[in-house]
Length: 167
Image 1 (cartoon, one colour):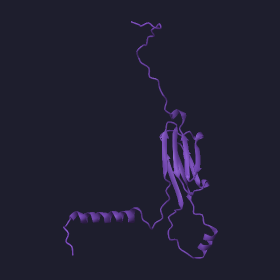
Image 2 (cartoon, helix red, strand yellow; image 1 turned 180 degrees about the vertical axis):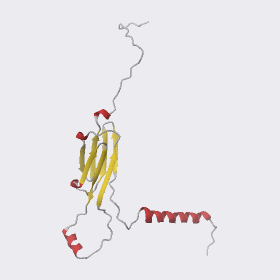
Image 3 (cartoon, one colour; image 1 turned 90 degrees about the vertical axis):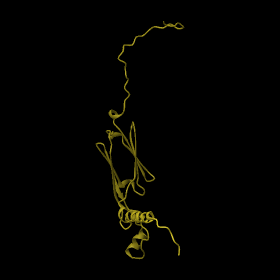
Image 4 (cartoon, helix red, strand yellow; image 1 turned 30 degrees about the vertical axis):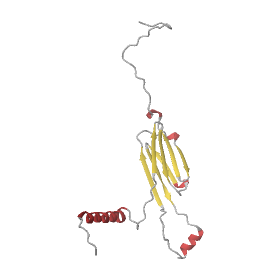
């Protein structure tokens, strides 16, 4: 038998760890429910407009719906599980069980509203290797313009001859 010194913080930390584990497993991320598929995205802005990249692995282009209304981009669609003929037959005759099924299926929707007006006539999209890229140029009137600042004092031109100094 070993004797250890009493440390009240040890019990408090183990209680905290137990509570953290309870919240992370039970409430925040329950493993027994199916989660709604999430489509993570990146949004980049420069003076010409916006570039949106959204990760949609395994989604067919015909299952993606992209719309722009005023300054809001809406992306929605559906992840679908494709069932092979032999899998379909196996589902009709109960032969096995899923051991792990983490690839989610279902619908997704993402929306983002931009500050500047979008030029609807020049939007470009590209879908390659599960990444959808949308280039949204802004209207010409909303792009930054360089404005020349003039001095209020009158400027006077003084003729100067080459090689001579003015006094």
